[in-house]
Length: 304
Image (cartoon, rainbow, N blue to C red; front, top):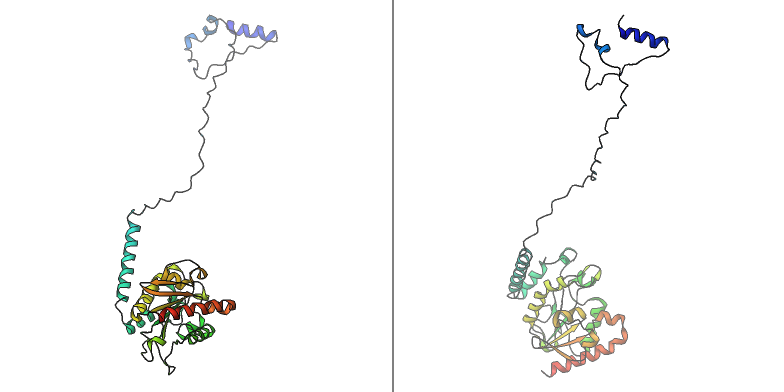
């Protein structure tokens, strides 16, 4: 029996057990040759087991913060060239000028046809019919109102219904009429004395829905028609009724009360400002002021 075996027996008799240190897994012991098997332990002194050394713990760097998923970004539309908007505006202005120049060449018949076929603004979609004008084609007086109302839209004639009846009474009081002595007469009618006849037209030829106020674009697109009517009639006096008619002819935003009572000018023609008959029906006390305006118009026309 080798010393190693006797040593083990002695330790066992003493109640002791000896455990040989386990071989390091990193460096396993080489297998002993058969010649060295009996002497390997005897020749190597027994060493106390080495203190267990904990393997160094690898410290991991904190994982980088993961950004929340980003919403897909829609590529921004490339901005339009800086010259695009001015170019579009220039084309629109050129088309507007060309249309106005064409209207300025029309006689009474073609002008009325152009009004009836007009689709220059959205009012063409809601109108029943256009409201061109009525009276003597060379009348000394021309009356300019605002926009057609419901009755005008139905009948195709300006100033009808209660407001039209009041206007006719006012005109008769100063010796003027929209109709000839026979009771007949339209825009091409030459009957009767032009000095006693009037021609009536509106700033707009189509009724705005629910009688709302005219919009600037609508007034601008309809202006060439009114301007041509004024050129064809060649009135000696213009009686303007209502603030939108004032805005169209005099380019003023002043109130009627501030403008009435004096003579204005439109391309050299005297202009008298007064209240619209529809307004007078709602404000009866101002009828006296309207009568003063008619007397001023009469005196101005007689003095020409």
